[in-house]
Image (cartoon, rainbow, N blue to C red; front, side, top):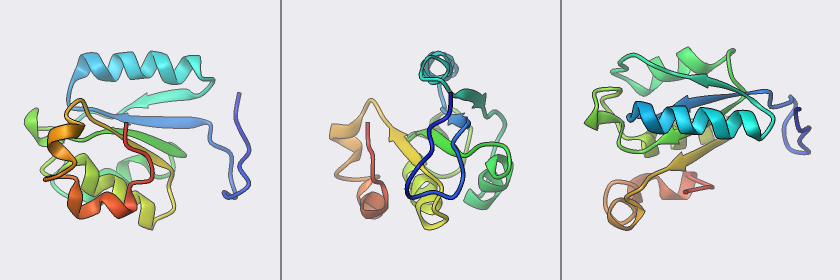
Length: 119
């Protein structure tokens, strides 16, 4: 199932899942599938935001992204920076963190105005 959007010129069919915790990524994969979308779990290591962007563009129409990407070596930047970059590109993205109380005031604050959804 895909949902047409009034603000996008394409349908969201595939959601990229970017999470530093493999177990959390697998849980998100199940939730994305249950919501009617096709999940795409992204693995590897990314030095720059642009590297990760080029990996997902053309493969997914939306992103579900964890914040603490550097803790496991997935990326050398926080998820908040990546989601803000996607906002500039008009790619729908949701930032997910278990540490919102801690991170929101410190490591997310720089990009918060470009993060429409923080879970």
